[in-house]
Each structure stands twice: as C-alpha cells, then as structure tokens.
Image (cartoon, rainbow, N blue to C red):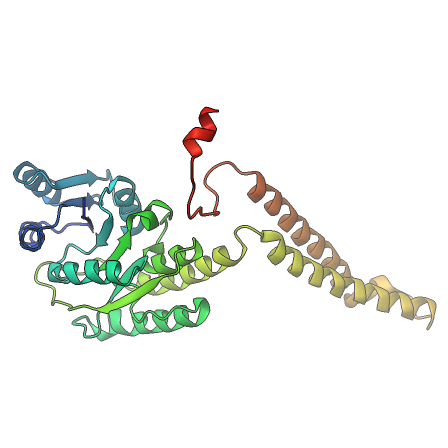
Length: 319
C-alpha cells in the first residue's frame, strides 16, 4: 500500500463526507493504493455514524472509536498502530488541511529520501490571539531548544515513513512535538513543505486558552525526556551533589568558626539549619536519581535503542 491517511477527529460530522470524497478523489486521480483511518476521539455528535457509512461505501475507509475524549495525541498513537501504507499522512478533519497537498508531500518524502516532511502553513486564517502568536512562540522556542529548522511544528499535515510511526509513542499532548520525538528516536532526516491553509468551513476550533499552558508544560517535558530519560542520574545526581556541597560548605564554615575562632552556640544560628537542610535535601535528590537510573535500566518494555538494519535474525533464532 502506498499511503495511509490518519485523521483524528472530535465532533466533525459536517465535514467528514466532504473531506472523504476529496481525499478519495485525489488518491484515485494519482493512482495511489491507499487507506483512510479515522479515529473518533469520543465524539458526541453523529461523527461515528458517518464514519460507519463511509466505511460501508469505501473499502479503504477504516475507523477507530474511543469511548471518551482522550485527546489528539492518543488518537494519533492508536492510528499509528494499525496503518499499513509505506507513507503515513496525518491531517485534521476540519477541512483546513487540503488533501491536494498529499501528492506533493509523498513526492518530496521519496525523492529527497526523508523520514518526515512537515507542512508549513505560511499563510494562516486563524485568530491571531488564539493560534498565531502562541504558535510562533512555541515554534521559535522549539527551534532553539532542539536545533530543528521547522517553521510550523504543530501543523497537522505531515508525511512520515511507516518505520517512523512504528518506532515512536505519542502521549499526553505531545502531538505538537512529533518531529522532535522522531529525531530523538534516530529519524533525523526531516524536511518541510509550504502547504495551503483553508478557512474553517464548519464548526468551531476544539482548542482553547488552556493550550498555552499545555504547550509550555509539554515543551519542558519533551526537553527533559529527550535529554535524561535514559540517564536520570545525570540530572538528579548533579543537582543533589551541588545542594549537598553547599550544605557541606556551610557546615565546614561553622566548624571553622567554632574550633578556630571559638564562636559557640552554633545551633542557635539560622545558617546551621540551612546547612543541615541542604545536606539532607541533596542526599535525597541524589538517591532519587540513583533509584530512577536503576528503574530505567531494568524496566521491561520498549527501549529507545533504534535498530537501523538487521540481517538473518530468523536463521540465528532457528539455530
């Protein structure tokens, strides 16, 4: 299969039929073999009924329905588990992403041998206060923190190699930073393509002011995880050691005053308690890092070591 189109959605009953017909038309005119995977993120309208109807009419249409609203990241993560196309296209269901961009994304991904092609909505039709300013802020910060050259990290229209989506996990609100997650997993060939952005035709946006806080907290999380997920001792150990040494320095200074300068009544001075607290806190933070390191090294499940190639594994396992 050439292409899998993954579409997370929440209460988009008005746009689904039009979007589906548009995608099918583009795929057939370009002679792609394809599938369309809709993930209904707990919609309360008729979205799932429409997906069922579309699936009955088109063999290529598939669907996943959540019992409640879990968020876009969870929807994408479940969609990535079932796709079969060699190239995976993600897009939103509100008709603001144009299916006409799919052939261009597919061509650029293959011709330039990239892992990801991210869309760039250079000209947007969103509210400046609600979307444009936060997007510019987060994109600028992300470029500086992770050395990525993407202008529109949060654009829903992206193309991935199948191997990429099979080796990443998207959770929480991390859909905004999938290129960073992929780069951390070893997929560093990331390109960008200017794509058209449509005005919203039906409904209203599902993202409110809370996206400001969530985006900032997610940025801190992905920064910490990408740096210290496999070596938490480097973070907690360094901080714990620094705090302990400050406390130890205070204790040494007080001991010097007592025995060399004969200044007594140390326990009545606030500095004594600051030093004691610093040594206890530093020890606890250091031990927390040690325990976290032991847990991360011995925890079962998928590791972050990505294998590029393997040969003759079946033969060796049979032997």
